[in-house]
Every structure is written in structure tokens, then in C-alpha cells.
Image (cartoon, rainbow, N blue to C red):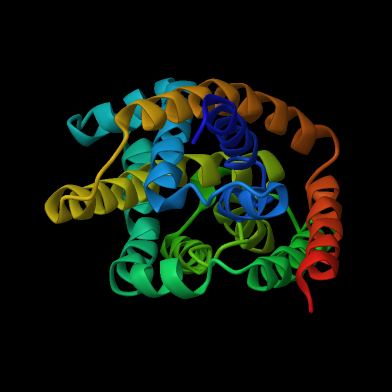
Length: 265
């Protein structure tokens, strides 16, 4: 890849990872639309890691509070923060399970424009319904075990390209009664363990199989994704506060229709 392509893909990842419009779908589609050579799953993992560092840095205070609660038995908010930490782990298990057993199938069979168009449109419509019809009254600390499991199962579905991990987890959280900003926050925090696990697993496969990697390309892509993703989180929180998820649902549906038009024989 040339430097321009690397930067473009890093920007796309940074913009789309935490917007509920599917980063993986865009990373697959852009090369096909503009005639680039597919950058491959290794580069996708690298830019996802850039996004991971961005969300960890953005929510660093929350992460420090949760981690300190693990080693603290003091009163105040430590119990609720510890519970939130455990819930993030629980919600990660379904995606980890599905990813471990089906990742090869997903990578080889589901990186398809028509599948992406279908998931973009369907889950975009579902997101619209959740935004308009759900009763949003709970905070992130009102989550309980059944709700967390449901959100975790929803996250595992996001392994299908075009679904959007943030989109489907926020949609599930809204249907379960969370306020919009709390649904977004839980989704962002939930991205940390799942991206970390997926990235470590994939890089272990790469290193163990001796696959050639151009580390400079990965570093540039990850760095660009980190910078763009960090500012995208703040922008998204403002949009969801003022307008909700409807603008993103509309974008997904329109993009899905365009992809069908471009790739349907």
C-alpha cells in the first residue's frame, strides 16, 4: 500500500469505529469502490488497535476507577464500579466464543459487499426503531446480569461485517432501557476487551504462521486511527446527545442501497 491509502484507511477506521456505521464494512468496501488492493485482515487489526488506544485514553478515568475497585474493598462507589468491570467481562464472553470458533469462516466467506449492504440496512432500520420507540430511563449502573448477557450476544453478531459493533450494542442497550449516552458509554467501554482479545489472537496467528508483515504500514495506520478515533468519540457523544441515532440509521440505509446498486449483478 502507498502512504495515501494507509492514511485514508486509518481515517476511515478512526471515524467509523465508534460511529454506529460499521468500521469493518467501510474498510472492506473502500478498496473495492476505489480499486485499491484489499489491505487484508492484518492491517484491519492494526487500525482497530489504534481505535482501542483512543477509547482507553478517552475513558481513562473510568478505567482507572474500575481497575482500582478490583483491588479495593472500600465503600463509596467501589462496589458499583467493580460490578461494571465484571459486567464488561461477562458481555465480552459471547463475542470471544463466536470469534474463536468462527473467525476463519467470517474472514473468508463474509467479507462480501452484498452481505455488508444487507447488515447495514437491516441493523440501521433496527437502530432507528430503538431510537424512536425504546423507553430510556436507566443509567449504566442499572444494568443487571440478564441485560449484560443480551448485549454480549448482540456484540457477537457484530462479527458479521456491516453490522457495527457499536451500533448493535447501543441498539440492544436502548431496547433494554438505557439512556442514549449511557448506552454509548457502555458500548465504548465494551469495545476495549473485545478488540484487545481479537487483536492478540490474530497477531498470535500471524507470528506463529510466519506471515510477512510490513510493520511501518501498520504503525502509520494505527497512529492515524488513534488520532481520528479520539476526536470522533467526543463528536459522537455530542451528536447522540442532541440528535440521537437516527442520522446514523439513515446513513446506513442509504449506504446499503448504494452498495446494492453498485454490486448487485
